[in-house]
Length: 234
Length: 213
Image: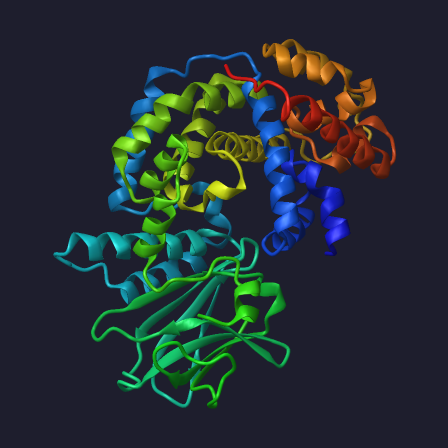
């Protein structure tokens, strides 16, 4: 979708008056367009006021308890909502995989645990979307690395469960590949005995593949200097 | 990550540790409500309770206005708050206020519920069903339910056609296409009315005194 097309639809987007496909296309454009983001912010101030102008009614007291009980439960158990039933089986299988990969473990460190929970929530939120996809990266090294992403929301995460240490002077670098053009999505080092999750946001419709190459520490290279060790098609 | 080219394509430079990302976000908050959302993103249940107490009335009232049924409104409001709990990290302070983020999310979820309700109620979808033609009833009903004087008078500065399109979209939960079908007018006409009407409301409301209830 061009900027002009998206820009024409922004008012309806703010009103949630577009159909699914249009919503998806505008969202995708929005992620890389600062002008449309600003415009939408202003339009949402308008819709926010439309929403605030309705007759105000106190919610039933039971709502507060139900909501607070809901988040308590959510802190321990990830509830699948009825609405997600569409790809429930697939999502459930992926959830298990990722939960296993993330290792819902007994980490004593609160910081580490909270970081991991946040990362898990991000991945789970990704997988909960009916449009979520998961790709296993394969190549010249033995590894357990998956890339999960939701093209609709432009969110994704690399889940590295098992990948050998690249050596002190090297790092792994993640690339998103558009046509023949690799674009860097950052560098990482595997943590021994501990899975890591690298969340990222991008317009995945632009890319055909994700790849990982070994580059010099600490910050990698502007363009890959070695053959990718792992590759996954989007 | 350090190349200019890659920064341009990745919306937010990604960070290897989610918690760092959250902390950085938290540090940039000026506004209290944005701070609340950042705390919620870090799973702060007390911050969530504060946010709930601040917004439950607005969220429930909006859901009730659109759905017209206290039971359904309660269910959707619950879903909305759980979504806020889960998705507070998606709020980006530089892209608007916390209030409009919460209300936009609430509206989106409520409209989704309304559309699910309609699919169940009108199946198969009978095109040209007499009951589904026109918009005057919905518009009248919606306008009666608007108590905010600023919004009400801003809506009254629109042409009746623009007002009808916007009210059917926002308070009726209809898509542009559904509005065109209902009113039996071309889709392009609906798009123009919505776009022009929203621009006008923006001039009236965003630069004017804010509606606070």
